[in-house]
Length: 104
Image: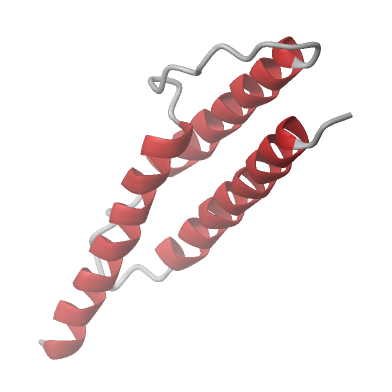
């Protein structure tokens, strides 16, 4: 029973991280207007990131098993693929915002 409780709690923590990523990359998040010569380029890059995130979430939605079933070990692999994709988006967003702040 203790291992199952831990497994369920671990899955719940991972699901919370999925929700946290939505607050950062969801297409429901309104993007600010970026001014300057690169404004449209930055907006497009962020919109592309939102589209990529939507595909990552769709991949999780399409899973054919119960995410909270601690006996199903595939969730860990699927979650780590999702998390790696989110990490890539975070790195790209960080680089994008850094170049926006750097004067030409």
